[in-house]
Amino acid sequence: MTEKPSTVEDLIQNPFGEQVSVTPLSEVSHDFPATQTEASPKKLIDTLDEQHQEQARALAKQIDEKNLQAIISYGAAAQKQLGEFSHQMLSHVQAKDTGEIGDILNDLMERLNETDPNDLVAENPGFFQKFFGKIKKSIYEMQAKYQEVGSQVDKIAIRLDHEKNGLLNDNLSLEQLYQRNKDFFDALNIYIAAGELKLAELQEKLIPEALEKARVTGDQMDVQVVNDLEQFLDRLEKRNHDLKLTRQMTIQQAPQIRLIQNTNQALAEKIQSSITTTIPLWKNQIAIAMTLLRQKDAVTAQRQVSETTNQLIQKNSEMLKISTIETARENERGIIDLETLQKTQKDLIETLEETLKIQQEGRARRRKAEVELTNMEEDLRQKLLVLSHKEKQLHQD
Image (cartoon, helix red, strand yellow):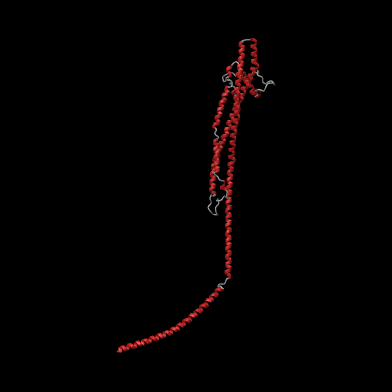
């Protein structure tokens, strides 16, 4: 069973962009030296692994110095695929909008900012009013508020987790793009190495042999062969240079892909940190703060109860002291004060004296009145007698 060719082999399968017979690796000619002389600078083929070296030698064998038109399409298929790959990579990057992640993180910050830590400080002025007074913000109201915010944060966490998975999946796709880019890089190295081998063959063997033949024969056609080989050499050098420029694209794209992957990884780690650390830590701290707040509320209430109780005890003690002293003082007093008895006796004596005086005066007035009455009665009797006498005289006359 024949093994399916790798991507690199696919890219070098048709080096001239047309259907040509491909020399199997097992039939590669060993006319191209596997190593260079010590005096020669290290060439590209020396940096390739053994498999790619064999592929480069096989590809160099396919380069026909008699076919000038083939140089135009040498490596063109790989370049075209690389261009399509670059467009695909650009589309992939443009399709991935990390702005939504920023919006979600901003939404998370807005939800967290809705919770004012100062609300959880029991010593905050105005937080507690007087004992048994109305509480400005009850614990239950704040607990309901934090539960609502917590529910919104949980929904945001689900969205962030979805975005994180999207970033990780995106990195998997980018890894495939990276491997494809590496395949293009390896394929272009094989093309360039094969071109360098063919250039070396032209410079060291084919052109010198053609020059020697033209010098010996003096035939104009042999001279034209030399000229054609030199033209082929020049065009192959230019084509190899173009392939090196194309290879530079793959060299630049490799760190670009890694940079995107690293950015995605950093965002995914940041999101993971928010989901697994920041949000749970926020919830724990809120729970602890609410618990401490309730404890502080209980302590404050207990302190105020104690203060009220102490004040009540002090007032009761003062009232007890006053009451005891007054009771003792009253107990030590007689039923009637001496001063009261003295005044009463004085008033009684004065009353008796005044009464006797009044009685004496009354007795004297009565005696005088009796005399006056007697005199008045005698006077009246005398008057009546006179009048009676006068009346008799009138009747007699």
